Each structure stands twice: as structure tokens, then as C-alpha cells.
Image (cartoon, rainbow, N blue to C red):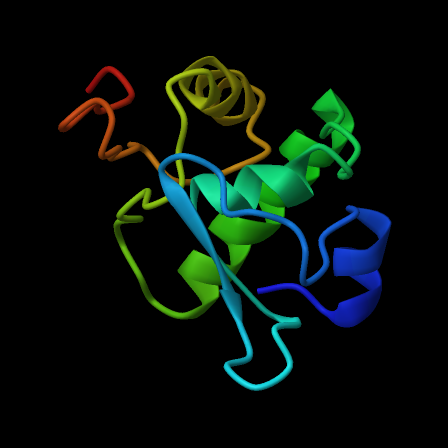
Length: 117
């Protein structure tokens, strides 16, 4: 989902063709993009987003795990986890920055980080 400013910055307008493997949803009357970009069309926006820094990634994980614990969730389903995040989780857990003893990831099946008991 993108607002009109984001679409404009990305150069997406009524004349922009949907990329292979994706679709830019457009208003049936005006032909203007609605802001809904499906599958590969989302890549048209990603090119305009700055890369996440290591500090941003660490902060996001720390805040996310803290929120999970506050909500009473004992396990995080890891819907958006990437394989590259595993080492970062291990690092943060080892430093005591996060208190979850395991990580479950869709990409890894069940990759558990458990302290030695």
C-alpha cells in the first residue's frame, strides 16, 4: 500500500505498466494507481526506500521482542524473519539485549536458540 506521494516519488502513474509477476491496481474510471501494489510490483517502491542500517535492525528486534513479552507471547512466529537475522538474534540474546530463548523462523522451519541447561 502506498500513498499518492510515494507513488509519485517512485514514478508510478496511470501510464506505468505492471511488472512481470506483479500488478499495480488502478482505478477503473481514471486509470490512476490506487496505491495497492501486488507481489513484484512492490519492488517498484522498494527501490526508493533507504536500506536498513545494522543499528535500525537491532533496535527493531529489541523493540519487537520486548513487545512480544509485554503481550505475553512466549514464542514469536517470525513471519518476516530473514535467514540473515538469525545471527543478529543470537548476538542480541548473547548480550542480554533480548530475553527470548529461541527464534522460530518460517525460513528455517524451527531454528531454536536455547541457552545450555
